[in-house]
Image 1 (cartoon, rainbow, N blue to C red):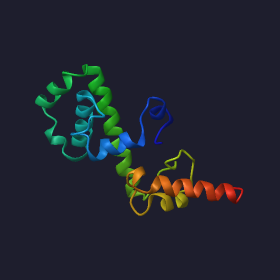
Image 2: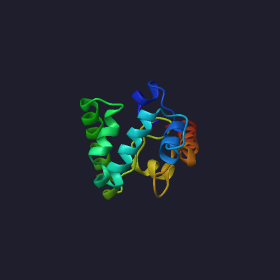
Image 3: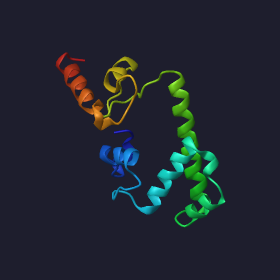
Image 4: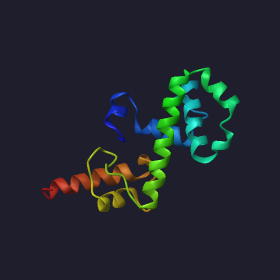
Length: 136
């Protein structure tokens, strides 16, 4: 899981994958959540499309304070993920929640970190079981 607080709030790897791959058509997300995902996608790839009309759509579901908080959070995350990519930095935690080294993370996630359900979760569990068997 990506974060303990997200897991406690009910977020699952399946929801993360759905949010990455199929959020527009998904029945797992409310209209407000889909709009937040669209906001995130636009902030990352097409920020020029975030205009007054888009903010008006956001205001149908969120207060101005929530829009600022959401935008700040998205901007921060887009920025640090971009920065980490320039360093060839891998996630510090495995999909099953263990703190791992960069070497182990690279083995778990492969050349390019992808969805946890596309292989990394199984590799993380295998790595964890192998480490336990070896006493580490």
